[in-house]
Image (tube, rainbow, N blue to C red; front, side, top):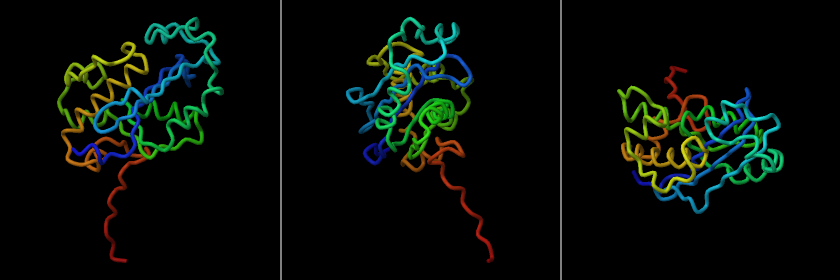
Length: 200
């Protein structure tokens, strides 16, 4: 895989307040450049939700209402996040969730494409019992020594997802092959199905 041929790509992860639909309390966006996650230019934002964080959500990611007190509301950071994401490709684990949450909060945002590392993992590692982020970390053993924060925080999960993406990418010869395996139908960047030739 020639990583220099990749378009601009950000690995993203979001954490919510536990409501449905969620208010976003953390967003991380980690650029991948030259086959490496670039922490020096990564973006990370905390936001105080308009509705309180549920006890369950706080137990998962540790972002309690007390931690988020005094953080900016979403409307204060939305433009900055939109500008940071731009029109780059994004990658995420179970990307439907992150893409839909971000798209709901950034109505004018449109990424070039959406790589789903969950879909990619099923194509790359067939036969695993589970394809959760934890199961893939255990299977692929990516180097997480430089991962920030801890599991279930957006910055850690984005870094882990980036390392898994790069590990799986080595199983593909070209970017187009990776996209064919990794972009879910109906999401931006999905390959167009080949049209059957007609007589007309």
